[in-house]
Length: 543
Image (cartoon, rainbow, N blue to C red):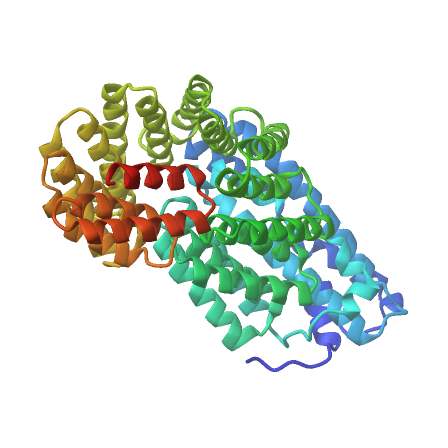
C-alpha cells in the first residue's frame, strides 16, 4: 500500500497553487488556483467535444452536446470557486487544507477524465453522456470541515495514480456499454488491484469493487457479485462516499432480490439505496430511476405485478423528464414495463411498449446493435404468447443474426436467442430444426460458461422437451437428470424434477412417483401453489 501521512503544504500546492504560504497573505496565488482547470476546459475543449459528438453520428448528437456542455461548465465553475475558497482558508490547519485539496484533486481527476472521454466520443459515449455528467460528484463536500475531518487518511503524492485509475475505470465502463462485459470486468479488477497496491484510497477502491460486483452479478455469478458489492457498499459508507454506496446498494437490489431470489433482502437494499441517494444527491433523478428499476424487477419476480408496474412507471417518468422521451435509457424502461404488462396478461399493451422501445433503439443505436436484439427477443416472447409463432420466429431470427454479427458465434447471448428460437420451432412442429438449434446453443454455453451454468440447465430442459415431443422420453431422461443436478438446491430444481418424473414414468413408475413428490415439496417450499396443484393432478392421474 502507498504510504499515508498528514497533509502538508505540498499537496495543497498541487491542487490550489498556493504552496505553503499563508493563504491570506497570498491572495493572487489563491485567485490563480481556480484557473488550473483552464488547460482542460476552455473554448477549444468545448469545441472538440461538440465536434466529437457530431462526428459520432446520430441525429440527437448535437442536442446531447447542448445539454451536457452546460452541466460540465457548471461543475468547472463550482470546482474553481471551491479551489479559491480552500486556498483562502487562513483559519484551517495544513492537515484540513490538505484533505480539502485531495478532495478537489479527486473531483478534478473525475472531471478531466470525462472531458477526455467526451473529446474522443463514439456513439456509445454520446448515448450515455447525460447519464455520465449527471453522476459527477458534488463539489460542496470539499468545503465541509466536518466531512473532511471524517475522511480516511489520504495518500501522499497520489494524484497521478488517482487520475490513471479513474481513467481506466472509465474505459471499463465504456467497454461494458459497448457490450464487452468480460473485458470490462477484467479492467475493473485490474483497477481495484492497482488501487489496493499503489493508492490505498477507499472511495476509489469501493467504486472499482462495486463495478466489478455489478459485472459479476450480470454474468450470473450472483454470490461473487453480492460479496463484491457488499464490500464496496461498506467501504463507501465508511468513507462517506455516498454516490458509490448508492450505486452498490442499487446493484444489490437486483443481485440479491432477483438473481438470488431473496426478495425481502432485495427490498432492504432498496431502502439502503434510497438513504444513500438522499445523502449523495441526485441532480435530475437518474440515480433514483435506477433504484426503482431494480426494485421493480424484484417485485416482478417476487411480488405482485402491480407493485412492479408502479416502480417502472415512476422510473419512466424520471428518465423521461431528465433525458427526453426518445433516449435509449427510456427505451430500456419501456422493456421493463412491457414485462410487467405481459405478466399481467395485457399482451397488446406489452407489444405496443416493446414496439416503441424498438423504434427508439433502432434510431439511436442503429438496427444492428445488440440492445435491439434484446428488444426483438422480448417482442418475440409476446408474439409467442399471443399464439403468433411465425411472427415470433421472424423476430428471433433477426435477433440471432444481430447477435452473431455483433458478438460472435460463441457468445452466450447468441445461445440464449437460439434456445428461444428452438422453442418457437418446436411450437411450429419443426422438431428437427429445434433440436439442431438447441444442440448448437448447448455447445456454445458449455464452451463459454462451463458445464454447470444455469443457462446450460435451461437449454438441457428445452432439448429434453423436444425429445419428449418426438416420443423419445428415454433420450430425454439423461438430459433432465443433468439439469436436476445443475439446479440442485436452486430455483428451478422442482420444475426440472417434475419433468424428469414424467419422462421416466413409463420405465420406472416408482421412481417417477418419488421424483414427483420431491418436486412437490420444492414447490410447496417456494409457495408456488399452481405448480403444487399441477403435481397433485398428475399424481392423481397415476393412481
